[in-house]
Image (cartoon, rainbow over all chains, first blue to last red; front, side):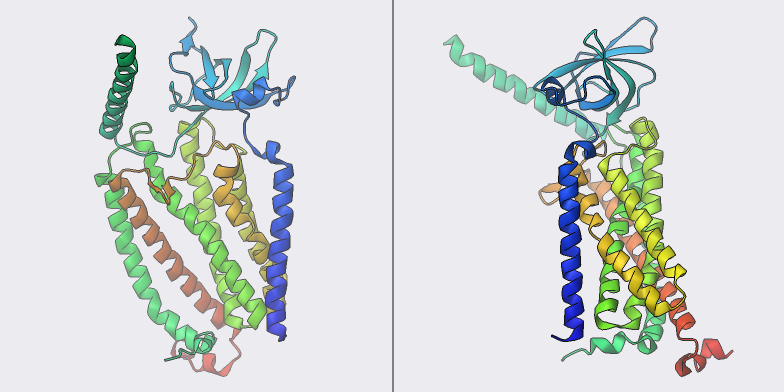
Length: 157
Length: 245
């Protein structure tokens, strides 16, 4: 082998070795690399019990309830399997909306609520003008209505 | 017809070639910047959820993509320099590093500016943001390591090793939003199609092309300076018109 081929082989081997090492480390640290736990993980007791952690999911539709002081907010975080009640006092980010992604940091208290110290909105990867979003919503509503009608129809017979 | 690639790997022939290419890249970059900014600010509609804030993507996304690609190109040049012992490859690697660092910084900075109003935080230690920060540090480490060794050929070899090992980080940045739960959203541009309005796409891809042309023009300009500096004692440099005067 010529010296330059030897050097090329060394470089390929070095990248493979470092890649493997980093891959193994990241795999071992999987839970620590992820930014948040899902509600299902919390119910399976995979999340820390007595210290602060982050939980992520969707804000459940119709679950946002404000207290009279105008600052304290109650809502449910859901991953469509499990849900977890959260209470937060403070200013919410612009993208915080029902049905949208959210990440909250806080501690589970004895009252069964997560007392959040920070609430972050998680944006999705779709970009469209408002008219397109409206059209999409209408189409979805029409689909849902059609599905409901067809589900009811056989029962009516 | 076989092209003799080694001809262009000689600084003697590459120096004038780069000089001829730079104006073309620079001018087309300026034109595309103007077009891209026009489409981005005037033609593209506001976003349904983010309103006007989303327009940061026209600089944030291109600079993130380029910061990652430039790192791979830099590492490839560094590897070529190690394998073939070509002087020009190592010079190209050194010429790319500052531009890569600039784009990594722009990506992090614009992301923070967007993150505060949209997420509610300037910075979050999620996998995407952290790995991009590591990319910036790798660029800065490459520049610093190269500068700390006096003999340029030894500096090339040491820095090349850092560049090659660091290239493992690039796929981690790209796949971080898939492998782990992150606050950063997933990829918009996918093989299965792009989930973005067409005018927004046009603006983003025009800006991406403009940033690429800028990066190439600047890297070529920088490599010409590096050639002049490193080869200052060779005969062909002393005979150059711009050096004589």
